[in-house]
Image 1 (cartoon, one colour):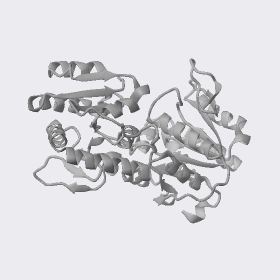
Image 2 (image 1 turned 180 degrees about the vertical axis):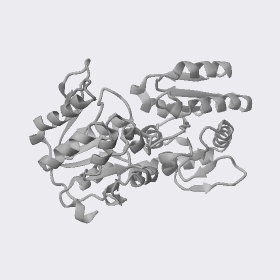
Image 3 (image 1 turned 135 degrees about the vertical axis):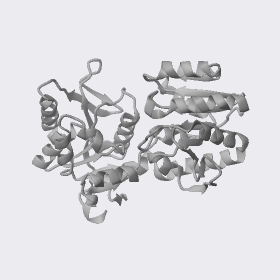
Image 4 (image 1 turned 120 degrees about the horizontal axis):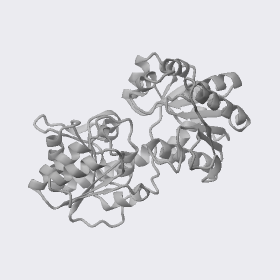
Length: 389
């Protein structure tokens, strides 16, 4: 796996191919928008191709970047969707030389074929450790995975994702490491923060994979130890009513605020002291990067990209159910008792919170600022990058 360094400032024409785009909000959509804006800022021609949505314009400019929502699909074994991608690319062929696919998806297959036929460069982002397995479960999954090996490269965020690609026979020399990015100007530490009561927050989909039942269970036990705390759950999803009921049953509903207002997520971070991400599985979570950029003390489950963002352990005493790492704390996924002990530790040790907050912010500034990751992509797309990676 290669780490990418900036190569040149040669202007490029780039197409970003993604399932959804702003105003649809999610980690992938936000990362795509971050990169599009940064490419444009640095003088490159960029446009987005995404799926048609009834309530959105088929053609518009967002942030001064052309967005085409032209990909459609009907039945007939999804062949119409694949053809829609191919012919959409054909119509736009003079407006780009490079494609970045956001995910190993159905659109990857026709995009690879198109690029091979028309001499364009194509890379895809393997956005989670299970990318190949998820794609193989699709109707045309085997074809998509075989064709993905003909792309010029795969971008991964974590060692786990790299290993999964290699196990599925993706060429090692085509795997490149570029992390997720975050807007470090929007997501920055609060100038002033009210210190009491201590405030926890979570941001993301309210789905089983996020492990929020573990978080709320730990909060119910925390109430017996120290009742003076508040919690912000930022996001929405199918599990919301179940989680609200769980909080009521544990007697903490008055301390837990559920809000679906993701537009103000940076403000919510700045009102908080500790960010908790109890996921059962993760790639490189954007919400965690945003919280780190805001200088929050972070606690995450010991899995996937969370491990890598928290850094190596500096205290993993066997008697402790959690690990103190360079940039935050880790606990075993699904272990509410271990999470409770981690919460009690950071509540009782404000000096540790301050150290972890400062390190988290520095980690993001050095490795995950949009300007840093965008330049790594530009280096990857550069005509001469192949020889220098």
